[in-house]
Image (cartoon, rainbow, N blue to C red; front, side, top):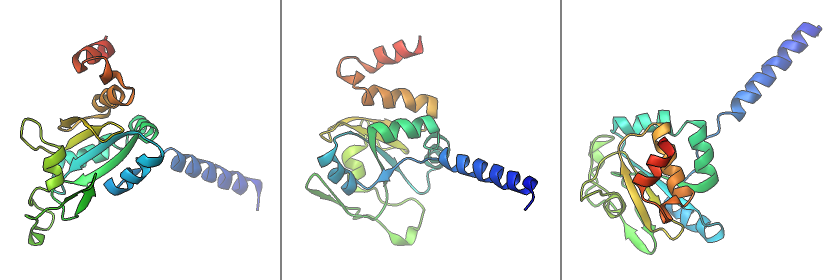
Length: 181
């Protein structure tokens, strides 16, 4: 093989290897896996409450949860869960069983009944909206559900607010005004 081909193969290898290394993803877990992991290494929890039919949920998965800064911060500081707010999966969280008794399999990926776990963790002023990202502390205490589509530059301050424990001694309005200046 001549040296031009060797260089071309080497360049191809380096480019493809580097491309794969830069495309890390969020390490999504089930709620049951998080409960087990928490026993060995306590962390904050971030739950992406989404639905199959929700356009903004799909945009958040495509645009926000693929951002390398978001990925890095979430993977280093949180356990991340994707939870289908209208899915049929039964789960047990902190000893309580949750299901979706209104789930109708004939609806496919369209709107469906709301899962009991969604109702337990995601309402804001009694209302459910998608997407909602629920933040919890290391004891699974809900810190805040945050509703709506967020771009990386919008979610990163929230991730840091909870992940860096700023919420313990400052209000969100004080914290966000400091970081904007």
